[in-house]
Image (cartoon, rainbow, N blue to C red):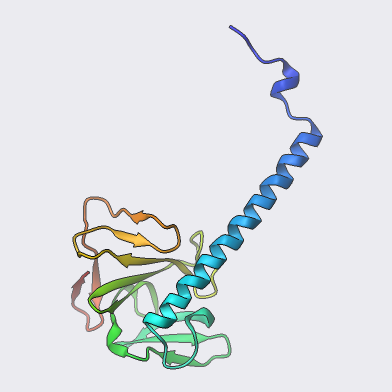
Length: 170
């Protein structure tokens, strides 16, 4: 059995510094890439689910007031959706939702909100993911941010609280 010599298995200070520098560069590139994807995804929201005023890119907080989705901005102003009927459901509490469900032409989009999530901690509105429903409700959902299918265990249909308080199944 061959073993590595101690000089090959231990990093020298120069190698460690070099690796740290390379990892830092890779992390910065990844963060820039995620920001670009988030900006593109919020542009998609602006086109598909436009606010009455402002842009999803500038939202710092979403909440549900009665049966309306409200988007709040850094200056304290707020806006609803241009078409309020596009907001159909949520999960979590109305004042601090965990997710919001929007619908356009029969297809659902879920904004996953988590200020402690990988993406949510970097996003001013706390959006951790934006998920799109496949063509058929029984098919898996797709994450705009990761570019991958969203696995929700064996349950293919998502369940939420409708904006009127009832059960909503997407």
